[in-house]
Image (cartoon, rainbow, N blue to C red; front, side, top):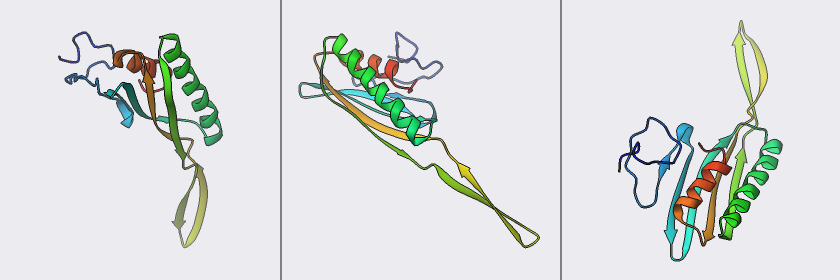
Length: 138
């Protein structure tokens, strides 16, 4: 089915075919993919948080908790919802003019997040909707 026909993934103006796994490429390297494995529904995700490590870890904890609450509210059972977050906060810019060196620190408030949600008792579509609503992917 073409993307524009009955698609609820939240991406406008993208043409791609839906597969049974409902894979969706997102903007800026972010994505969510949902599939089945044995009796479980497995959702994987990757996105950036434009926050410092401290802010990002606090925010991410709340986002994952929200996703878990939505899975439970939908009648699902949480097997595992987890994420790995990394951050490279510090850098520098070095400029040389007239044999003088000027070093200026830079701060990058970006955290990269990759994770998985393994749940039972809901559909792939329900998990996909939960991840897209709970996490800053769309």
